[in-house]
Image (cartoon, rainbow, N blue to C red; front, top):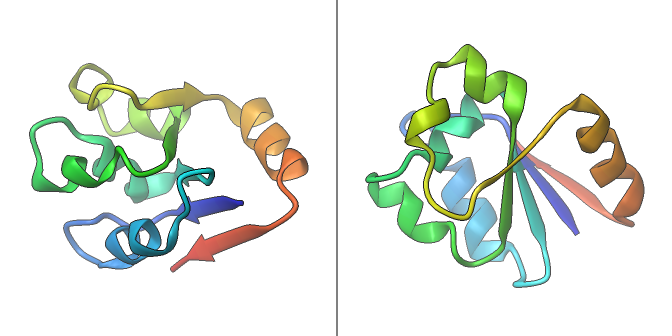
Length: 95
């Protein structure tokens, strides 16, 4: 299952809720302000190990956090975003 989070974990609890419901076989895609969940050194980063976490490269770059991502977070471009949606039978957006 693909979970998509677009809200900052510092303003909204959708990332924490997502990680509480995500199975280990799930993929979590961080987009828009959701990419702030991938920052290393934050208490939010402690939740990143539960599922595969991927961030949208253009949103990471737009927010200037390229060099500050937690270990294990993968980056994907828009084509990769489309592939993730197409490859997953179920997609849950957390708003």
